[in-house]
Image (cartoon, rainbow, N blue to C red; front, side, top):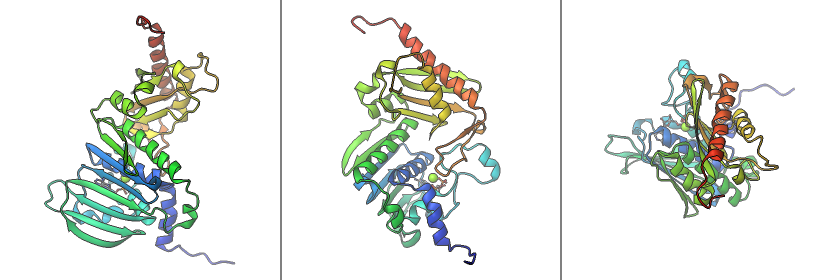
Length: 339
Ligand code: ADP
Ligand code: MG
């Protein structure tokens, strides 16, 4: 019979990393969330070869103190929560203290950062989670994370990566979502040197929507606003005539966090139930805001699933907000020459 042994830490780290870092787009998500939590006004994301050879995320946020740069890469190291009570009301996108540990375990990372108020910044290099270089560095306030050669030391995962074009598209979709989740942040995306997105960061969801969808598509969306028991719903939803063959245009955010929610999807689609739309799905960008302790975000390592205190209240709030947006549009006086 094989003996039972506790795994060596670096093996355990690789296993844990697999939960958080599935593909380049997961790295993009975690690094952008860190930038937003650091109160950045602008975030630039660059990828090369679909993010497989390089992902660089630059922000102008609060930066990391030189003395804490190494700590940031340790598992369960975070500045965002302190005690178990903080888990009841999480107001930041991150809180698990796992992303940097996970990312650095399966790639080569360079960090360049200067904290608010510090004269000098720090440059740190890691390979497979181990620090290989550390230097003082002059740099602007904020943080740049460079992630190279993702999964170079986990061939089993590397094998499952899609073509660069598909991984790059997944990175782009992630950037778009994050841009829509925080319209007050100006988000820029460059793929293989070419700029593909720039949101103005003026705080208006409509501006971000225009930048992400393009004017023609965005014109097919109408504003949504409503409130339910202890929550508000705001955003845009597509006119029945502008629905598409996929659910890829449905974006849900809860307290600024991108989530996958069956309840919210079902509520939106129910609101379109009496429209004839065989094989078509509405698009929407909906922000649900609620008390922090009315939603549990500590459900899944990627934090994309959440549990609501009451799914029914969420369903009702979303359903009525979307339904009345569609009705308001139908009864709106048509412009001359309009259809
Ligand atoms: P979490 O976001 O869950 O706290 P991470 O592993 O993503 O965990 O990051 C660890 C810590 O490193 C964060 O809590 C934060 O203090 C710091 N950090 C990471 N990225 C940034 C950034 N872009 N700007 C400022 N601080 C950062
Ligand atoms: Mg984080």
